[in-house]
Amino acid sequence: MTIAGGRGGDRVPRFPVSMSAEHVPGSAVTHPAAGLFHRVGAAVAEFFLLSGPRATVRGRSPAVGASLRTWWLAARAYLRVAEQLSPETEFAPALALYREGIRPLVGAVLVVTERAVLPADVVDVGAAWATLERNWSRLGIEVDLREFGAAKRALVEAAPFDDPPPGKEEAAAVLAALSRLVDLVGRAIEPRTERRLAAYARARQAVVAVVVVVAIAIPVKRALAPRDLALYKPVTMSTVHPWREAVGGTNLTNGKIEFGWATATDNTADGGRQDPWITVDLQKPTRIGKIVVYNRGDERFNDCLPLILEIGLNPNDMKTLGVRKDLFTRTEPWVVDHLDETARYVRVRMTGTAYIALNEIEVYAP
Image (cartoon, rainbow, N blue to C red; front, side, top):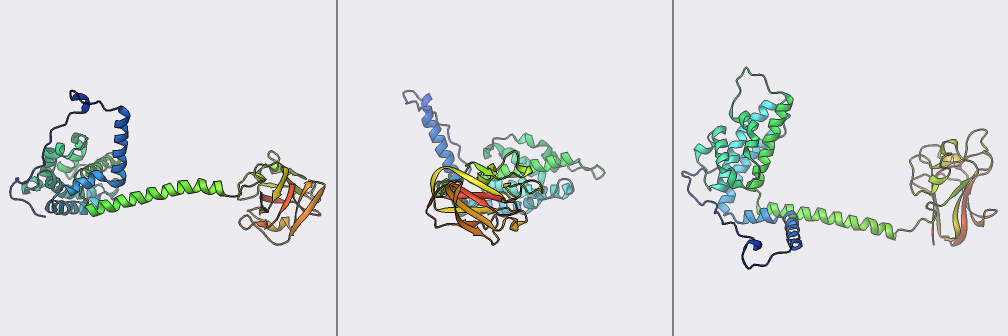
């Protein structure tokens, strides 16, 4: 790190504050909406392009940029470790690291504000803090440095050895304030390179692009997906399991694949287990191209086998589409497709003493 022998060098120029159009005689008054659009556009450009920080970095000479990064990296070597320590159990070493890191941090500030670093300005933490106070207004930070009074006292005023350590809340507050101070100063001096800022900007744009694509793709996928013709259609059953008496078979066509089971016929000994059946009413004659039956998802997957699948326009005159004898699950359902049938009712049933517990029934057009 090069320390200049004198304070000279280029100073940050001070520009006069320009008058707004509404204060200049004879000028046109900008419409509030136009001002709002301008601010929004500037905010978008700032977020996606990092236009402000990149303009700041471009305005520096290579020598200033190199010196700034040297001081900044020296500061971060201490501060990065300090920010990771626990205020409850590692307050003393964290404070010691902040004392060491504040000095090169102020050196970085001097490179930006005065283009030179005098040894006396960073000889110790007290001198470094006094230098920071002298340059604070030039950093453009809209926070009063006096808010960090407790942090200053912890850094500059070394406590006697026989003093008890601070309480947990006080220690946490001091380290949090120091971390915030470092963050504010880092943002103000902008030590990143143009290449690093460009990479950050591209990363932000890529993340937003992915979010936009996903936000568009999900509703488009849903809109283009085949429509479940059985969704929310009424369900009748030979019997209803006592645990589902309140909802009956409603959950069988609610569009959700449950972890356990959506509905079931009564499986108690005296609950009418002979020849159980469950029927979905599509409410009108409907062309059917595919039927998907989801088994329960918790256990006893074979209890509904063999399962008979039927369709028809009249519940008293049903056509059998298939009999499932092999295991199927909630993740690998029973799919009967390549159909071209017209029916109103879709029914699954079993023969003999049994019960049916299923997750969902879906019906799709050809």
